[in-house]
Amino acid sequence: MLVLGDAHASEPDRLETLLALYRTLEPDHVLQLGDLKRYDLPAPTWFVAGNNEDLDVIDALRAGEEPPETTTVHLLASTAATVDGLRIAGLSGNFAPTKYDLPRDDLSGNHRRHFTHEDVEQAAALEDIDVLLTHEAPTGLLSYGYDPGCEHIDDLVRALEPELCLVGHHHRHRESEIGETRVVSLAPAWERYYTLDPETLALEGHDHELSANGS
Picture 1 (cartoon, rainbow, N blue to C red):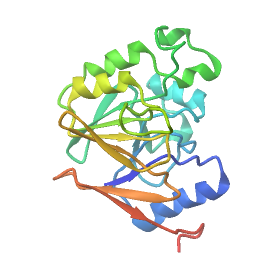
Picture 2 (cartoon, rainbow, N blue to C red):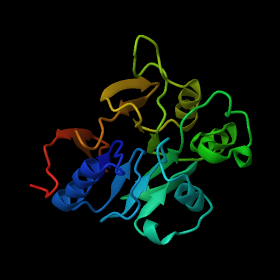
Picture 3 (tube, rainbow, N blue to C red):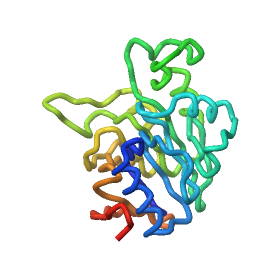
Picture 4 (cartoon, rainbow, N blue to C red):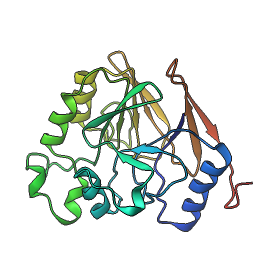
């Protein structure tokens, strides 16, 4: 299974790298960690929304609609899906302290990119999760002279107890643990791709130098 960090595919060079990965690796299933910005992809892709998305498309997917440009993507927004025998859950969005306690229906404009307490509570009620995808990081994973992590993600990991939690947003490969859960922050798709073994949940990173034509 192919696993990709942030894509930022609204930028032409990064879109070409993203598509080159699909062409070269020919994956059957893909997991992606947000900031995707391209929703018609060559293989079925399950993703969480990041803070850089087409929010009208994201809202439509949240509502269960299928816009024509989203034929191969599946949004995980406090929901779960079975992919290659694994139960994959996702929390979409990033954290904003001033928006967290609001109902999701009260978010408008660019604030729709955030998750709320309702989103976290809905995700925490999911069961039998093997892998959790989040765009926002838990605490203890990254440091910029301060900890950019969010305690609500810590709480979600502890509630679900997945074997693996994959994190986007920060464009850095870092690893930690929360209880028995291995937590991995992924490098962006234009620097590295990852493969996940569905049998063992072993995650392996691969540096690449793919050009726009896939060579």
